[in-house]
Amino acid sequence: MKHFLKYLLVIFLTSSTFNIFSQYHIVTDTTELRDLRNKIKQTQLIIDKDKKNGANYLKLADLKTKLGDYPGAYEAYNKSEELGLQNVYQLYHNRGALRERLVDHEGAIQDFTRAIELKPTDALSYNDRGQIYYLMKKYDLSISDFENALKYNKDWTLPLSNLAMSYKYTKQSEKALEYYNLALKHSPEDYRVLYNKGILLMEMEKYDVAQGVFTEAIHANDHIPVLFYYRGYIEAVLGELDEACEDFKKAESLGQEIDPKVLSEACNRN
Image (cartoon, rainbow, N blue to C red; front, side, top):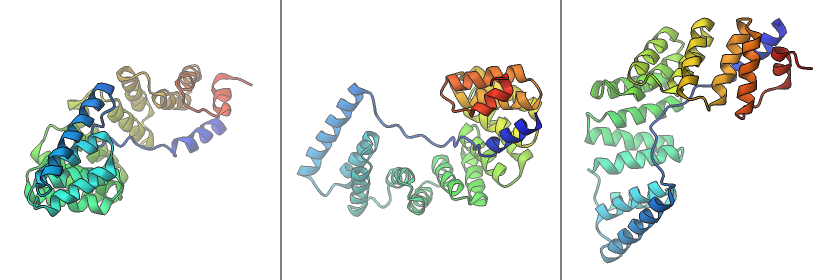
């Protein structure tokens, strides 16, 4: 059993949190795609008649971003800036979000910073810039930005969860737990926040509490294999091997890759 738990611990230590960042919609529905392409075509026709209107290029950039044409969108954002839209918040925030997707972190920070200069009470740009700092492991800066996001939108779950993640990686576990709890007050059934809280509790070796949190996450979304996997890990730690076996099998049935040694030890399979 000790060897088994040690083996599982190695797997656990490779786990990571869900990054619950701002999500920007890309159109995939067939009807919506057709409408979107028509709008792009119409906007391009307008641009062909007047190539000096920056607002039209900005509109085109936003449409192409929704289509997933990132190079085309980036070119259109830059053209709108060239044509005099240097004081338009939408340009800098939206291009910053695009640069985030293109993993141009420095460029994204520049654009989000400009967006904040143009709209100093904008919680969204503070949160999004904080996410870049978080990815760059500049946690002091990410914490500052997430706190500012909450200053201007105190009931927003996203920066609460992001603050928790930042505090976790600065080894402030109790502070991280406090913010996960605050996030869950606003979004009690967000399985991603519950998962991250469960991982933190496992790191703190609060297995009984973590077990309940993963159970809540499973109730919120029972199609996520990793939720069953980590609850199984906790059950193994607590000596509940029958329950662990059941959860490992469920995780495997949902597509989770599980080493046969794990199933053999938990389920007495040869």
